[in-house]
Image (cartoon, rainbow, N blue to C red):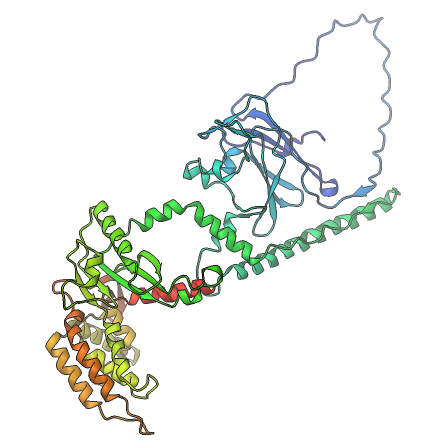
Length: 565
């Protein structure tokens, strides 16, 4: 091993192992020398040579002239970058990161989150040597290796274990466990920075996209290092010719090593999630709400494939007014097996000391002619009000229409919504004033008309800045009856009627019983102010509505997108 270069020595924090990196620029070969001295200890001094008595003047040997300096032997072979040789035995785990062809950064046990003093593990008296396996870790643009030091032993069976095994890392506290640089699989490992790029579930982000992007970056880095090595070989060849040295033999650059498939990246992402599963369960089971929403769908179960195909037909989700999911379960039928799910949520509220929610929105089972609604049987002993989601109430009227592709279908649904809801006039007035001032500023001070102001207000602005409330049972009944009477005989240009009289008569007869189930609970505020928005010379409130189960439907679409990726 060549002598240590003082310019490459570096010391870590107090209490860590002093590390010396020795780098040889010839052939891009790298050596790592480890010293067991702590950074807090004083430097070791070499012992002074033994003192000898001076010789008399007549006994001193004559001076000899030093021989001329010898020329170093010619360099016969230049090697490309090679994998690091195993470091010497050390009772620590060393993290080697090859950031450049001839650059090595070495960290101690604190850098990789390993401690020899964890519970149930003890150090042996006689060292067993370096861990024989080196774990390769894939980084964003390169690869590095985890090199294990001395074996730790189990305190019960005294069997040596892997320094970075899951059982050993799980005994560390979260602060030290999170400092471990990679997520491990059976053979390879992925750096945590790459795993973080898998977490955002945005449009276009998938394991295949990440695998292709990283392989492109790795190939460019491999090409850069290969060009650098070949340039060094060319320079060495020219200098050898000028000094009339023997002809050197140059090895070819190492071939490019492709990355694993995208399925491996998905496995790494799953392992990372399982690593903090307890924390995720704690966050999920600490979620409450004053408005609960219970909704079921078949969209997810239709995408099940393989051995789990046809094992479930419905997925049921429970969320709160903020869109946070409290629980999710797969069942073989709509409403089957939901009692355990609901009783678990009741127990969560009781254990957390939370009051029962004010209202529960469902897509079915809102009322019963014989007694309590089925939903309250699942959520016993709660006495919460159960309401029917208005979107599902309106969807039931589509079975009385001839087809959803009729030209008057959109008009019918819009008029039906107006028969159920009414806008808050104060919020409408504030929005009109804001739009009027905005249009006046846009048109150089010319005041717009009332029709121009109403035409400039979009449906999105209405839903964002204005509140709605239900009209009441009797008013909604009379308005819906008038709507059906006015559109009963309407047809399109080909003579196809919009309403099927027999089907719509049965639907309306049944749905009149659910008109009390869709009314807003008295005294309950369903809107939450999120922020303020300046529009014109007025500040409008940005509102979020907690009515109905629309947020759960959005979560269903998100689950479909997640299952496809």
